[in-house]
Structures are given as C-alpha cells and as structure tokens.
Length: 398
Length: 64
Ligand code: SF4
Image (spheres, rainbow over the protein chains, first blue to last red):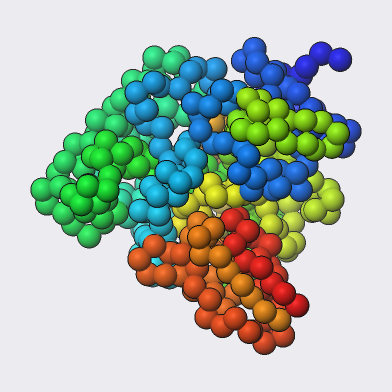
C-alpha cells in the first residue's frame, strides 16, 4: 500500500463532511502513516486516541523539534520570531499563556455579553438598511469578531482592512511562502508599534496589560507583539468562519435552523453552538505534534523524532462517541467535542468564541427570519486551501 | 462524592465553570481553577463528571 497524502480531499457534493478517506482509515487503521510534504507522519483518527495523545507530555508542540509536521512544508523561522506559545512546550508555554488567561475567564467574558449583543444588533441594523443581496462574510461574519477582539486587545478597529487582508494572506496555505512571510512581517510590525504606544500610554485593554509585564521585565516587547499577532489572528478568523459556515450549514438544514429561530432558552442556544463546533471543525487540518519519547499504541511504536497529526474533523465524527456523527443535530449533547483541541494547548479564546456564537446564532435568524442563500450552493467558494475552513463569501438575501 | 483539583495542571480554559459554576470558580489574577466545595451534593454528580470529562488538562478528579 502506498502511503496516503495529507491533507486529504473532501468529497464533491458535501462541503461539511471530512474527507471520506479519513472515515475509512478511522474504521480500519486507527494509526497509519501519511505523507506530508515528502515526509511521513502518523495520522491519528479516533477520538479516544486523539484525546489520550493530546494530553501526553511525550508529544511536543514545538515546531522546531525534528519531525514536527509543518502544515506548509516550510522550515520554522530560525530567529524564533512569531513562534508564539501555541508552538512551544511547557514550562515556557505555560508561563506565557498564563499572562493572557485572565481576560478570558468565564466571568469576565460573561460581563461582555451585553456589549457583544449591542455590536451584533448594530451590524444587523446596518445589514437590513444596506444592499440586498449582500455578502454575509464581509457585511457581518468578519466585523462581529473583529470589533470584539479589537475592543478586548485595544487595537483600533479603523485599521481592520489592513489586518484582515494580512491575516487572510497569512493563513492561505496556497499563498507563496514569501507572501505569507510578508503578511506576518506586516502584522508583527503593526503590533510592535501598538505595543510601543501602549508602553507610553496604557489603557484598560489586554495589550496594555502585557506592557506591564514588559516593564516588569517578565516579557520582551517582541514576545508581547507576537502574542498580539496570535490573539488578533485567532480572535477573528476562527469565529468569522464559524459564523458564515455555520449559517450556511443551518440554511442547508432548515429543521435545525428552526430550532434556533424559535427558542429563547440560552441552554438550547449553548447546546446548538457546541454541536455546530463539533460538526463544522473549521480548524480542519489537525493538531500537529512531534514525538519526544517512544510511545506504544495499537501495536505500533511512535518513535522519538516522528511527526503526529491529530485531525479533529474526523475525531469529532467518531461514531463510537457521537451516534450518527454525520447528522447535524442541535439537540444532541456535543460538549465533549475536540473542535478547540485538547490538552494544555486547548484554545485559550474558547469562552469568547462561545459567547460570540451564542449571541450571533440566537439573534441573526430571529431578526432576519427569511434569510437565505442568494446563489446556488455550487457557486459558493469554500476555503479548501485555508488553515481555517469556511467560505470566502456567502451571498445572502431576505 | 469528593472533587480534587490540580491547580498546577490547570490551563484556565474555564470549561469546568461552564459545566458547574456552583462547584468551580476561577482565580481573578490568572483564571486558574478554584474549588468552591470539595464535597458537593450528589445531585450535582452529572455536571461535575462532565466538568472532569471536558477539562483539557485532566486537572479534575472525582471520587465517588
Ligand atoms: S476545565 Fe480544567 S483547565 Fe479548564 S479551568 Fe477548569 S480545571 Fe482548569
């Protein structure tokens, strides 16, 4: 058998299901070698194995480790710029991550709910007053999380064209390496300037909080700017894609959309958000790790120096954990999903993402009950080449 | 039922608070888990087991 290549291709027809080859592997070969940019890496397809391995300290998240399966085929930057704590191991990872956990605490995020509701309502007012049909991505899905993360970080929203364009280029896997490097450089410079300004004039926001650490000598200015890039990028790309792709999925499942349109129970809405996270898996190219010490599993040995890929798209469709996994069922209990990853690197911003999605999904379809696609499904451009899955545009009408 | 937490492992994801806000809280400075009661009533068992199951850092142990 030749080693299959990763990432794999989705079936034509269903834009929401993971590649069928992943499903076959999950059933037959829970642990298999795949080829990624000319090198072999282990592919872990079952939910239980993914959770076990993601919590195992013998696996490293450090991109600079030999064997780490790079998602682009490019070697990591030698100067360490832009590595960010998501690509580091403890204790350094924990030290840096703990500097930014406080603003994402449940009670602090909950306190933002009224503000987020106001942002969402305002954008829907604009939608209703503006052109019809309209691209939901540009007019709504991107502005919601952008406005929210800008407020939280202390980034001027007026600059959003600049950082949205650069972050788009940064996560487009089909972009040339130079193009991606330039986008990263632009964002890093932008955040570095902003950190510089906040060092002079701190305000009540996350970046200003980081400048306190810089002044105390706990953090370099470069690392503070790097964290800013990471949070700005992660804070809006992911949620924007969940809003647009989630809306499209709901429009394709009118009975499920009706659940959200008709309920005013926050529990039902919260459950629906978990199920959409499980079903859509927008970070569809998997978590990446390098093996530090030999690990035995299913009769194989994952050797030190091997690469490991743990794709949550197929993990969340494991039939031994989620019955009838390919059905979008907003009433199921999906809370155990691994859409945010698992282990110490699990998404830091998840409470914020949940809040934004709860507000959006409980508001948009109730306020615009006739919302529908303005073009055929086959005309919608999907982000098959994106590090984050979603749609490039979603023309809608009402 | 006895609940044990390991603050050194906790990564402040807040999942336990979402699952059972009357049992778990987060420290103001850094969001690390704080146990509000280590001997919660039996009727909270389902939510507490849920909290332990979703904790990404395996920082919660429940002894029945
Ligand atoms: S779920 Fe686990 S990691 Fe998250 S705050 Fe609670 S104890 Fe900490």
